[in-house]
Amino acid sequence: MAVISDFSFTERTEAERGLKAVFHAKIVPLLKDRETEQIRRRRNLFVGGGGVAVFGLLAGGLVTVSAGLPKGIAVGIVCLLVASMIAVYQQTKWRNRLGEQILPILAEFLGDMTYGQNQIEIQEFAQRGILPDHAKADFDDAMVGAHKGLKWALAEATLATKRGSRGGQRTVFRGLLLKIEIFGPAPRILMLPSSGAAADWMSELFSSTRKKAHRFETGIAAFDAQIISYAEDPDEARAYIDKRFADGLLELGKSVSSKPVRAAMEGSWLYLAIPQSRNLLSLGSLWKPVQEIEEELHHVIEELTLPRRVIEILSGR
Image 1 (spheres, rainbow, N blue to C red):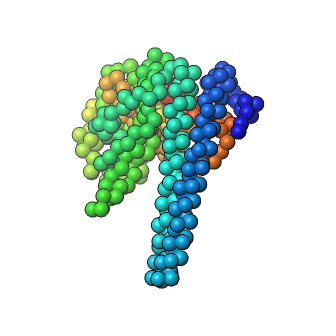
Image 2 (image 1 turned 60 degrees about the horizontal axis):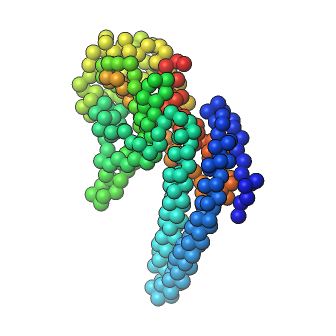
Image 3 (image 1 turned 120 degrees about the vertical axis):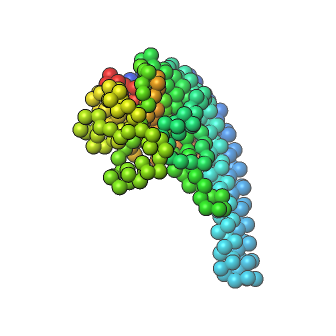
């Protein structure tokens, strides 16, 4: 079992200033309490998952004797898959429970956000053309807040389409949906990363949103080379995409995502779809001692302050 002296946290960034005291006062006691639960879940996993794996080996051996090696191997593989699913389930439950307790503490510390409130409407983003076609949308972490007087809402989302007649699914988007208040009212503007002339033409052909708008250039060479812009009134739209905003959007695509960011603007809101390759705001592991959480806390603080950084990048401040 861990003792208090095993826990440490070093403040690395301006956003973390003062977090060390909060870590020792609120997070360490919570982690100490959760350590007992972690040990219990590990035990359940070894008993449940290990039991299924042993049963699979025995059953596979018996089936091999009676029905042949291929069927015996198949039975063993199925049982090992079940054991693996049990392990993933226990790990997910542990992380979710830890996150539900620690993330509100971090959000309260940062002071300009509330964790656990989802004000993102999928339809709002889909109608503006920045989401791929999908049949199902799942939300994970969500929060709302304000920075420099601008309100924002963020949620982690996974979008999927149906695959074939058997009901399978294919993920078409995984990442963050972020909307930020702007000084409007702005016309509807759609800004999408270019995928090459042929791919862009095909996308326009099958997109009802883009058919209703005119493709235009902003006059900012670096931006127009990477981003395709659409608006019903291009002349009006150009007034809302100045060089500061254009440079900010390009920088955003490089600094917060491994893939290009898709954006739209309308009324008093800017809409961003930011692809991510991994789950965000993930804390803890069944397999790591609870006192080894410091690096994950640094990552989570960086992720929680993403809306701040986006606002500062796009505003040039």
